[in-house]
Length: 360
Image (cartoon, rainbow, N blue to C red; front, side, top):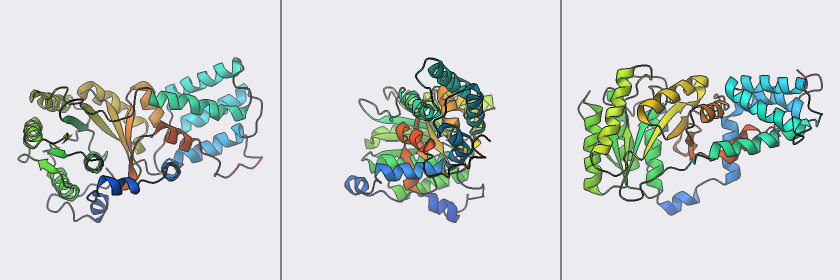
């Protein structure tokens, strides 16, 4: 169901001067053993994720908790109110229709009879739908892996690229960054700063250079130094401009031109989770232009409507692979559908509605 982080400022002179950017910049990772020791327990991650999608949970609390928590017999009036709550939570009309059809079929078939059975039924179904395409990052079976990262300006793309570089380095991968967002000098400078802190090599080009040429040069460097992964930060273009989408195709082809078998192996689309339904349009357009294989949902920090994750999953059929839960480097994690669905429907700690509010 939910998708950089800061107001736009001129950082071309000193990208690290902005305290917010400095806070978001990943720290240099520790060795794998130390890193593993600091990974929060699953319960802790669930709590953080629950906080991150609190807006959706509060909507569900106001409209759903009074309906499903009392063990009433299901009727059409209850199902209509549940449907309204899902749409308000930004599940999307089509996704809501689909889910409600499942509930209605289960109700009519006798599988679900009382309201307290609705959420467990939906949880089980949604976990399957969010996982059956695979949520793990795919690496090349032989040789280096090339990962293309795409997204519109303002979605948190460059920040997410840095976090991905940190994540890959922390699990023992040697990473080369390609700063192919050449039309934004600040983006290149930001990535340079982050690469130094992370401890990975970066390949850049001249200001406004052909992004595909930077990707091509970075692929060469990848092979020269024997690195494991090439991360390509692409130009953050509006998805409505066809010529700029064609530019992404050129970068895609440039990565494959170095005869790295299967390259690019992943194309990760960064989406701003706070944009809700608008993210669906971006996902559809980028999938056509760049053959997107996975999503990184950024800004899932409490203001996003988590239902959008389901909409994108059903309509675009692209698996979510990473989520950003805040500004710090440890606020990023690989997507866990079980945790996400559990967090979305974790209403136990929310205030029970008063009797007069139950049917509101």
